[in-house]
Every structure is written in C-alpha cells, then in structure tokens.
Amino acid sequence: MLSFASSLKKMAEERGYDKKSNPEKYRQFCQSLGASKRAENEDYWVNLFEDEVSAIFEKEQKDLKKNIKYWERCIIVDDCRYVIFYDE
Image (cartoon, rainbow, N blue to C red; front, top):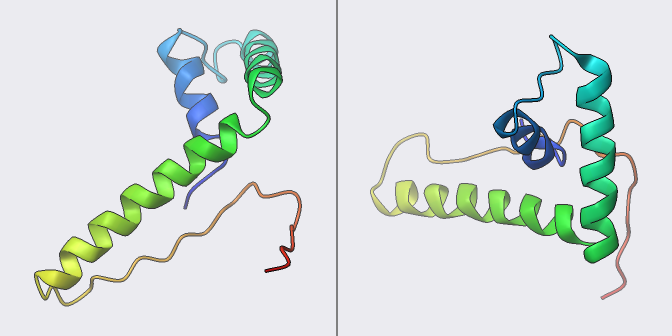
C-alpha cells in the first residue's frame, strides 16, 4: 500500500502532529503544509510519490537480479482521487 499523502503524514509526525491525540491541529497542519508546497510547485507531492515508487522499483530490480523467488511488487495507491489519462 502506498499513499500520495504518506510524505505529508510523515512530515506532520516529524513535527509532532499526531492525528490521534489532536486531530484538529493535525488536519490544520496538513492542509497548510500541503497547500504551501503545492503553491511552490504544483507537482511537489506527486514528485515525492514518484520517488517512493522508484525506490520500490529499484528494490524489485535488485531482487530480480538476485533470483529471489518472490521479487514482484504490487503497488496499491489507497488515496488516489482522480484518474488522469495521458495521450502519448
């Protein structure tokens, strides 16, 4: 399982915001940080997500080269809200 919001949630936790103990402040922080990073670069969160996918792919490739039996990875994105189609 991989989330687009995993980087944002990790940043919130690193700064001491916990969803369980104070959901209102956690939500405010996430909304504020999310919006500010998107204002700087609209693809900021997508780029972090792509970095996570790339890291998983690299691990998969290493396992494949080592001939490890169960090398395949399946990524399920649990918080994707929009489907985007690209014309190539």
